[in-house]
Amino acid sequence: MFARLGATARRATVGALVVGAVGYGGMLPAHAEGQFGTSISAWAPGKTSRAWTDHNNDGWKTAVEMSRCSGNSRNVKGAYFELRRHRRLRPDVSYGNRAIIRSQCRGGRVDRAAWGDQTSGGYRFKLTKINNGGGQSWYRWSAGTVNVYY
Image (cartoon, rainbow, N blue to C red; front, side, top):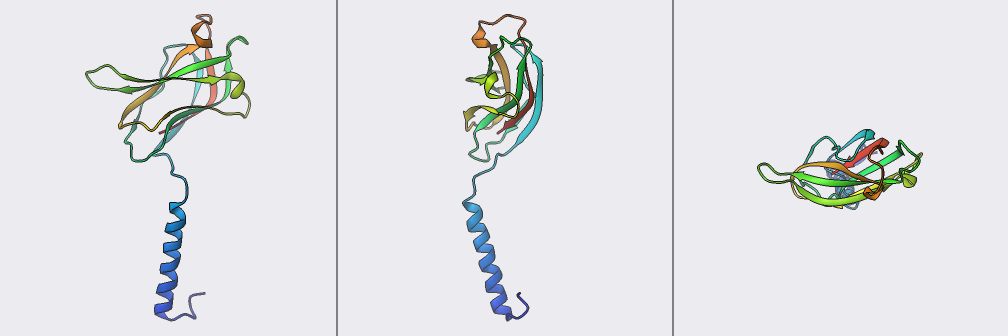
């Protein structure tokens, strides 16, 4: 395609393609700075995820998505997860609880808990309650697929 064009025309055409690609790319949605996948197997309240570091290089919202959710009883309806930021020599900061509903994340369906854009730091999520805290102490939560975005 470019062989028949003169050198100046080739440079102009390539430059236009680069500008067009950059302009188009600027219209695409932002991507998370980081993410990882894991699973949860028979977690009890108090169990925490592995840690990750958010450098806050983007405007992405911290979120946890789960699918293939289950409990060790048919009475397990949902679980509450808390986002925590670790602070050295000071108490951790809690960003509140978000619910994952079992019926919303069964089979191929996904339920999402989001906490918004967070400051730089080290984070974990923690299972705080099963069934709004009123469930049996032996209730457990599992999720075959867990994706964390930050």
